[in-house]
Image 1 (tube, one colour):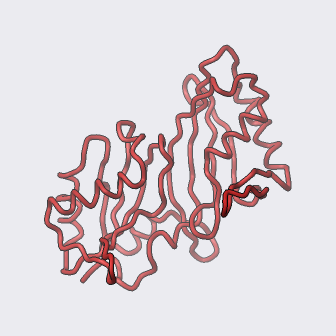
Image 2 (cartoon, rainbow, N blue to C red):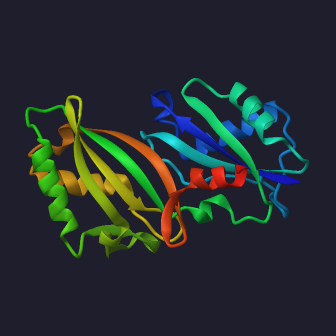
Image 3 (cartoon, rainbow, N blue to C red):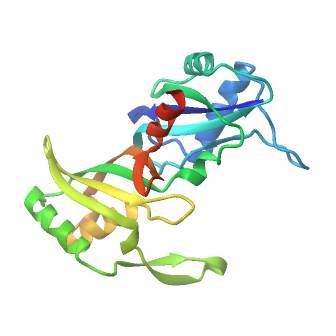
Length: 241
């Protein structure tokens, strides 16, 4: 038995595929290639396969990661090549490596994610990069940024998301301004980039927020090593090394 981590990019043509459909896409591809996928024990066994962090609908990505366990030894390089041959246009397998079967599950290692969000205003109002930078600085200066979150029995409670926003910055990207975000994510708690973007637009004072469209892209997933953040792909490189 062995476990493989693999990395992939999701491009524009697949931005509207849900997380569950992404899981099905990979499982079906592995079945077509007849990989000896390992299954969980119990009444309802399922493939021992997961993606590091669900990608929000409508978001593209540079460097997503997944892990899969096999009941027989599978070579990582051959796995990457055969899996790539089964992928649709818009999904690119970018690497794979074998890891210790007892290593912590990949989703449990995720602690943060970085995003790039272009602001495309389809109305008459404009947002300058200077104005955007001021809005971001104002958000970062706050001790509390509260939102309503629906919990059990559909009850809503107010929570503070400020601690989940690690960094925000603004930059020009061709014809429209762009927000760079580093946000906490994973099982330890986090915040959706879409919620943060809503707060940003509210701060700009745009009269018609419905005219705003985001070109949202996830760049990297992070874990911690020696009390510092490092990308999960760096962890893959260390294993390969």
